[in-house]
Image (tube, rainbow over all chains, first blue to last red; front, side, top):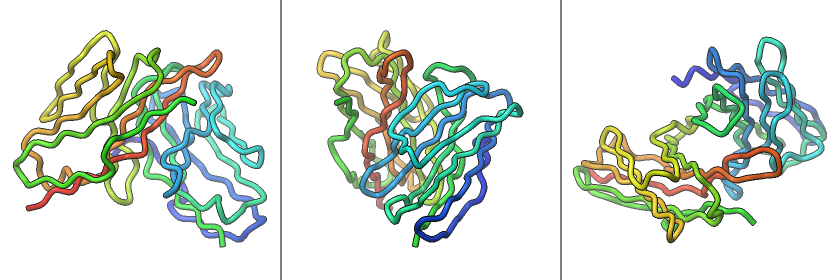
Length: 113
Length: 114
């Protein structure tokens, strides 16, 4: 158990819909990272928040957004969902703002029908 | 563009043998690398990391070797066990403007035969 929690574990929705994925980092970690893992793209970095502020951006679509709240939990919002958005979404956390060991949550499996 | 990739997509070894998983990277300025293990249905799990001021680092049954000259790193697992069966990812730090991020390789599936 990494100490990072994610909810829900599974999510099934339809195209065009909007969903919110939630992540709670390990106690004491201030950085939260979001990754997308699909069969054909591997593990892709989406975005990082550090202590409530956006820190780094990766290959995140404009339809996707994220935020980190004062209690340090984070939410990833996916809107106007497409079939290709079906994937595993992982959250990871680390202590500081810089690249360091990241501890991953169990992931949310999103299926868009 | 930046890339961190793996030589072998699948590696099959006998239980008790040593395993070597390879990874190549393209950014010569990267100075931090991590190996992750991902079991089926789970998130990636940290195994070991190494910074560019080192060429070798050892953990419990695992060793990471870094060759900066040819931009290559490897993960060695000693006395491979069935529980080692998983996908192994290397990840390297890459620079994106003011901030850095980790780029992950595509993964190698390690299959341990009893």
